[in-house]
Amino acid sequence: MEEKVLVKKDLEEIFTGFEKRQDEKLKGLEVRIDQKMTGLEVRIDQKMAGLEARMDQKIESLEVRMDQKMTSLEGRMDQKMTGLEARVIDQFNIISEGLMDQINLLAEGHTGIVERLDRIEKENERQHLETRALVKLSFSELDRRLTDLESKVMDLQEWRKQVESRLRI
Image: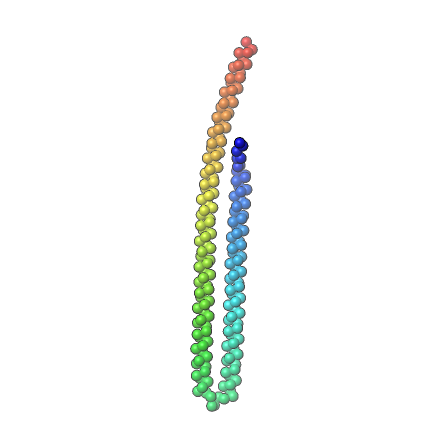
């Protein structure tokens, strides 16, 4: 049975490949997070633009009617404006609460990703150190075996010289 011995260059290639794959995964996560953030910003902008447009239409409508009936409807218009203001504030509060909830969820998700990446990084470091220790142990064992073999070869050469010298006599 042949033992496959990994040399330093093989280990460096393995670790380099592993690091590249981890970097690619991390970049992919960053891209997905950026895409989700961009999508959320677009949706927020669209909702706010729609809300502004609706508010503008309602206010313009109210201004036209106020101009036409200013003298006779002043008291009623104050009540309607108060009601409109309350609805706008309520709607704004509802929307802002929803947005805050979404932002909090996104922040929690980001925190979870960061924590997971930290755990993966620590595990990778632990595995790297463990692998280095195993490789170091293997190299020291191989060095010892090589030294033993060299010593035995020298003994055999010495023995051969002695045998050859006896045979020449």
